[in-house]
Image (cartoon, rainbow, N blue to C red; front, top):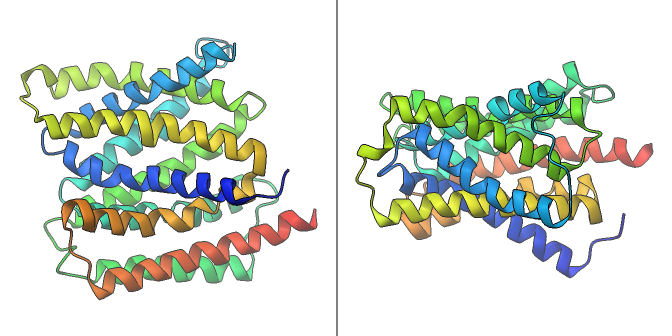
Length: 297
């Protein structure tokens, strides 16, 4: 892998900005659309740039090959369920809180990888990072001004969504021998196939009268934080490797808080900032322990 230069760090920062921008756009989309419809249209619009990339690079999409069950399962667990849970939760929770809650994904991944992935055992440094990160979340939940009895369930649904991301990532290891573009396009296809009829039956989106603002946010969600962001992720992984790409986790919650304040004028309290610092530091220690292991191999 090449040593990252200034351009690589710019692309990494831009990727974090794209992923962080998803949260306030989800919030805007919920003003007019239901969470199932948001999940479907986000997948649908995200699928377009991936399909175009596979077409121009002549990458065969294996969505309906003998491995279709894996693609379908990952599509449900890694896309449909978390997209729905996040959209459901953001209806009653500030987008900046959603960004912090979702940023616990690397920490959750460390716990699950200990049990389900070879060579990913927890050590003392990882334990410290896990405890620190989740302490920040617990402290965030003590902020009654922002998380209370009325939206506690919604906040928990966002946390659950982050866990499904991790489970989906572990399942992806089963087909890790395939090209990333093929895998992502295939799971997007299956995600759309699965969630489309559910959206039509339950939410009947043709009866909606959505605002232009919500519709634009939904289109943006699909094309940029879903489709384009995945393409940038592929590029970074190929050029700079997993360790460098994983640094994006530090930036997402920070940008999420900033963007929520700028675009939605969301409240930023001292507890939010303390929780944010705890989560980012927790991710740092978890990844620092993992990086040492990678470098020693």
